[in-house]
Image (cartoon, rainbow over all chains, first blue to last red; front, side, top):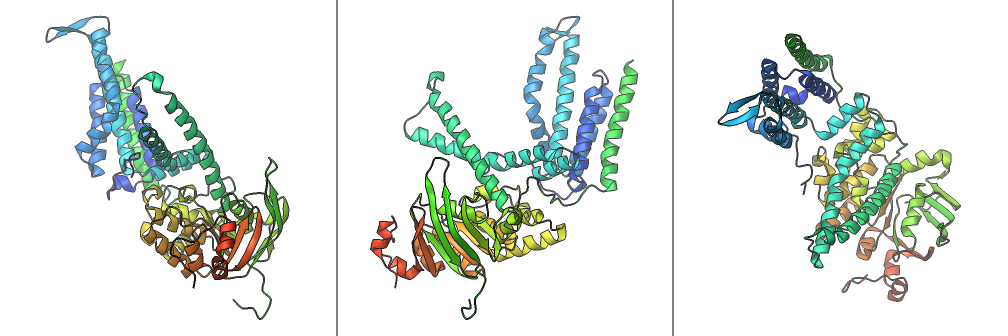
Length: 254
Length: 249
């Protein structure tokens, strides 16, 4: 039934799960920002970051398999990065008979390390926080209500719209439509148009249903627990640690 | 229902007419009085104006001509919010109605709009879900529910606003026979005035003692459901038909 949001969230009883969403969002973004500004040659710094992430997964009671699966979203970038040493110019080193550009190798490493740690961090956030909580957290961090409402509806209706699209495809296939070439795409384009109209009409019906239950144009605040001082302390702790590592590595690179 | 002294009607509609921008007169003067506690079926062919009619009851469609009052309160710009609390509307497609990410939040949406605080919201949500027998669905996501469960939660979302009048548009559409039976039992168990738009005549027969037939924007018949359904010519004239083998006794 739920092919679309095939549950990124993995419920556990852990301190990471228990943190308020806004604190986790701040910690994740702050941490990734520090990773991003770290000079690529400070290999030790990336080792520290990786350790922090691994500890995060362990405390959240999530295994290495989960972490690797979450990191797989960055695979396309990592694959692209693998080509850099072959095409970059400058001094080279010989590895197994192939000349690889030193600069290119560092470039690859830079992408792989930062993308990997970034993906693992956002994966940790997504695995420990249900999407509705993330949206609520964004709202509490000052993201405008219109934006969070749009994300909420996107999350809610993605499945419905994908379902409609699936039914239209079945209907097309049932009447012999079997597109193989680009010039057979016209029915798909018409179907996309029809899907747009249907989604638009659904939007109007949803709005009517909201008005019927007293909606006045502003989403009411219905959240559960807000971030406590200790939640913020944990979040700030993570960011400050990462900032210290980043600062040391930047100073060391001079 | 007491008839020995005059009561304030749960719903009073007088001279309601509505014309689409293209000139089509979809409602041509509806007069209807529904007493507190009554369950009324609204029958009629497609395109008769049934949905347009019920969307007037809580001001989703703006009134052009006529008057509407709900439990004695006249529908006007300044009473709109209270009217929407009093009229609980359950829409045909539950996916349109369940727009929040979890059942808990969806049922709390109405109470939150009423300005109730968290604790009161929690109480309302618990009571409404209990009334529809869906307490176990509290933390589920609407897209993971079955058709029957969605319908129950949609009813709960409306009950949480403690309405005076429950309006349901085609509540049995898309339900399997067991889901339909459960919904019927649920609605029959609620001590509320109900207005049920349906093509499911046996459903109307079992749930609603009184029915009206709306055709071409007018009420063409109003009476005990049993009497209306016992007139095959009347039904046929308005594109209605009892299922094969179904008889009213």
